[in-house]
Image 1: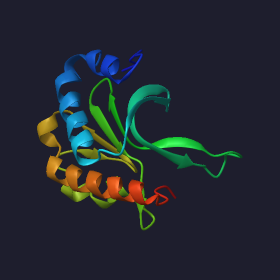
Image 2: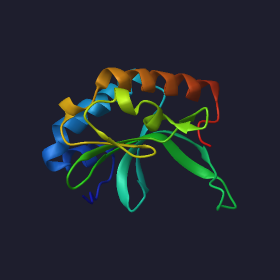
Image 3: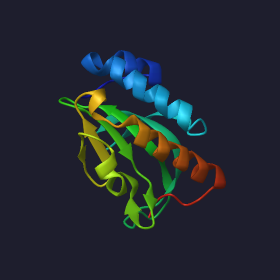
Length: 142
């Protein structure tokens, strides 16, 4: 789902059937990771809400840029929560996969069709940890 938006509020208001559930996840992120400031992020061929921009330099890049630790997106057939950080060389989403609920997990992507499928208690634990690591200035990406 491609959403043309000017800011975070505009993005949420244009999320269609996912608006109310994305607003709930956004509130959980803001409450449990208050230092990961939300910004509209364009990347991976779509616009998303990013939280906690940090320096990031892929191996293929010559210059570092910034990328959020957490992203939230409305897709055509699901919602996605991207947990881009790693912990001990493993993507956080993969590390907590068995505790995240009835979701589909990729390296950093947690896909869910209904909010009730996502275990928010586990998400809160992850967010609190990422907020702490962000405040310490830890390198969160491989």
